[in-house]
Image 1 (tube, one colour):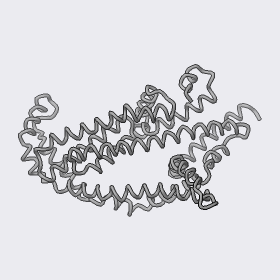
Image 2 (tube, one colour):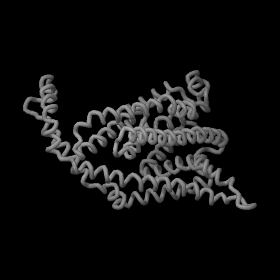
Image 3 (tube, rainbow, N blue to C red):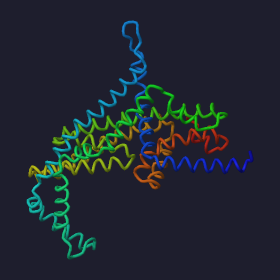
Image 4 (cartoon, rainbow, N blue to C red):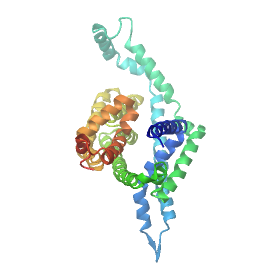
Amino acid sequence: MNKNFKIVLLFFGILFAAFMAWYFSSIVVYVLVSAVLSMIGHPMVRLFDRIKIWKFNMPHGLSAFLALFVILLVAIGFILVFVPLISTQAKMISEIDINDVLIHFQKPIASLQEFLIDYNVINANETIKSTLSSQIESMVNIATFSNIFKNIISATGSFFMGAFSILFITFFFLQDENMFQNCIILLVPEKYDSIIRNLLNKTKKLLSRYFIGLMLELLTIMTLLTIGLSIIGVENALIIGFLGGLMNIVPYLGPIIGCTVGVIFGVSSELSLGLYDQIGLLTTGIICVFLAANLIDNVVLQPLIYSNSVKARPIEIFLVIIMAGSIAGIPGMILAIPTYTVLRIVAKDFLSQYRLVKKITEKI
């Protein structure tokens, strides 16, 4: 076959594959989520495989089912714990007396308005009071739908379809540890079989360590935030700790978002109770707890997860995340490290003659 024809055929093959991935994007997402869950669940499957009942080993299919059951229990546990907490938080926000809040903070609002007018931040005919009033009212109106998450879940059939699809695919990925990579190998020429298998094994090993480490990081941050906020007397410490820890899945930007959400939730609780004089102290306490937790994260947890699990230098990780964020925003930041890990493994196998590639892949 003519070489140029092969190149053209390969080009159109890649275009067709990209089109199919876009057209069936929901299915691609189900498969990728299932692959990640299976990476997290495989250690549990191996653990269950070692269990013996008298002289009989645990059936491998049952081990896969039990691992999936544990993952499902954890997900259901989070829903059962945190949906009522979110409903309670929404109810507290809806109980805020907007007029009373604006009257109590009338002097600080007036001073702030004069300052902003002096520096031409707002026009002289604009008032912060009206702006704050409309914003708080919109927040309270949204908050009155205290069961919004329950309504979304119950009303959206696609959610259940997606959840079922992910669980179904995950079970087979757990049962056959090599199924995902075997499906990929089917798409490449047979002469590259050993190379692709080696590449996929390396990728799987590093990504498994990364995702397991990431789960441990999120759970640790959630625990630290919840304990710290409980110590300083924040009423809704558990929900703030959960959301604040969950936001850490977004590198660098996540802690800022989490802290902002934590302050809003904490302040809204005090406003609903009429404890206006404690807002400043409470806000300072919440910020300090977030700073302490994220200091531990940056000094201890992230070096272990990012540097050791994916075998990359912290400066590499930082630059990759910043570039990914500028290209694709928050989703890009979340996917930056797994994508960079895969690219480094591919580059090491196919572009090892270049000094730059040797340098960035020397730890793999």
